[in-house]
Amino acid sequence: DAQRDGFSGADRTLVGGMDQLCAQLATGLDIKLKAEVRRIRSKRSYVRVEADRVTFDADYAIVTLPAAVLQKQTVEFYPDLSVAKKEAAGHVAVGHVNRIALQFDEPFWPVEHRALGFAGRNRKDFQLLSRVTTDPKVPILSVTVGGSRAMDLDGESDAALAKRIRATIDALFGQVAR
Image (tube, rainbow, N blue to C red; front, side, top):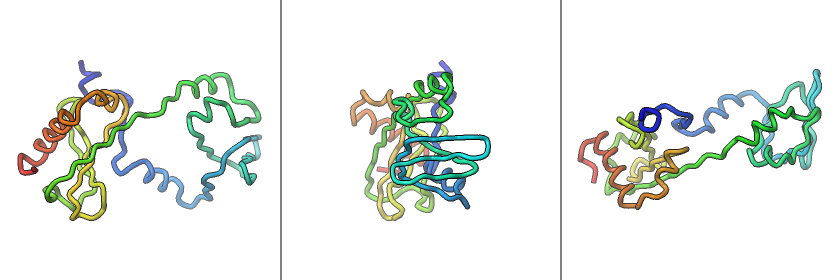
């Protein structure tokens, strides 16, 4: 069916990784990393974030918490989160990702590109190949698959996966790659 074999659904990949999105959004902001948040107090005019070793006061704050932390409710919120928000946090799932690396005798792909996208005919096609290093002389490509597509691959043998990846590469480059 189209939902299963097409490109519809909730699974998405950002070529180049999510960190580029975060880096762009963080431009010009005072970012604090690796602070284990214990408590968040918010009022109309300010927010106070109390972490393991420091307290932050600001007009506004964006605090990112792992899904498991929200689900365990280890961070205290004042005022308390609504029931709806707590229930929503309980439904957040951590993604499933498979990354498969393939080594070749020499690069056969355009080495000036870090990632190569492929719009396959169906959901089983691999849609992103990327170099595992910035050194264009290293002939290794990786395939990253996430979400329900990654779970579908868990039971496949290495030989079956290699054959499917080979089909994607052949569709992109012809049978020049060996």
